[in-house]
Amino acid sequence: MQLDVYLRVEFADYSLGKSTLRRHLHAHPAYAGILRLRSGKKSKLRDLVEASHPHEGWQLDGKGPFPVRFVDGTRVEVKVLTVLDDHSRAALAAVVAKAEDIEAAVTVTSKAIAKWGLAERFQFDRGSAFDSHAFRGGLAALGVHRNYVKARSPEWEGKVEAYHRSLDRWFVKELKEQQVVDLEHLQQLLEAMLELVYNRHRHRVTGAPPERRLAGRISSRRVSQNDLERAFFVETRATSDKKTGEVRLPTGSFRVPSAAFAGQRSRFRYHPTHGGRAVLVARDGREIELQPFTTRPLSSVRTHVERRGTGQLQKLVDLWQGKERPNAQPGFGLPEVFTVLGELLGRSVPNSEHEAHAVVAFYRKHGPLARDELLAACARSKAGLGSGRALKTYLADLERQIGADGGTPMSDSEEEQP
Image (cartoon, rainbow, N blue to C red):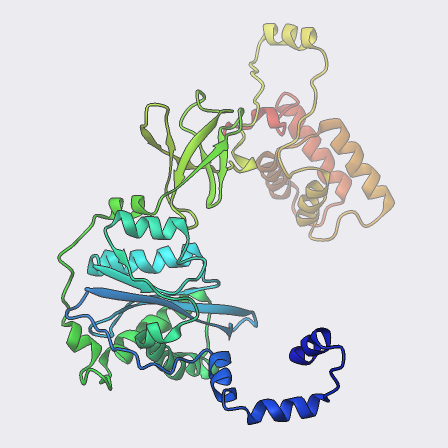
């Protein structure tokens, strides 16, 4: 007991036992008041405050985290963030999120504003996401007043706390018997429950369903989607890559608009939701929209095609250049040639060391080979010779076709550009 330690430090001759000290404390008239102060509960009666019309005041809070298991066995912890109208108790917007962060707070608030307009006041607790400069600054830019709320005072948000009890009863507990595919499906389940169950039930305090009390009324203060996004922009400074122009912001990678900005440390503004908009702030104050930075697939790289023609001059070029350096088609080499020959013979190739040496010798002499031309040549060999011939017979016929076509009917030099 901490008090026992303090008394022994203060008084050298202190000798009371801990149980005796505890008994005296419990008997003291002031001990009941100490217990009330320790619990944090206020003995003073509080007033009930309520908005006089829809969208005069909104409340925002998160429920959770609580576990959800998907049908594939994945288990995640999620939260539900909801914007509640103070007057009607209607759930104006709700989102499922993995964390109560700035992205989730901006997402659910923007969703409510886009559909219902702007509230005059907003009330939420002192959570780090809600109390962040980006979120508070966005609301201030939109002209929404933030009601003062004391930390660790849940009674200030009694309406949203009552809503959370309904959410727990009608949604969280029902999920235990519900198959959930993924987060998108979970969001659909949440919105359906709010629309068809919560907003239509008779509220005990107001005496009417939230949907009827709201009556579809929209706030007189409206804002465009563009201005809504810009209100929550966060400013930062970052340096873009001097070769690619890529700049990495907290919400993703973007490309600066031109080489003139590449490699420079510049000012950027971005929306805090993942994959949201981002702009570069030029020195003259102009905002230049940025595009997401994407990497090209390797298959999009153009294949080099050697320029060749027939005639005596081409022979001079071949002699002048020397031996041509081989270059295979992507993903088509000796392993695939074995497969093609196996399909031609109707069995596995090679089935002996001798066949393996024969195919390798053929490939070294005439390869690399182009896929389409080799398949066409094999089809002609099968049509001319029939089935059931030996491997060396088909290889000889393929060599004949190569010689009849000038020695390069199956070379990748004939490949067309993609």
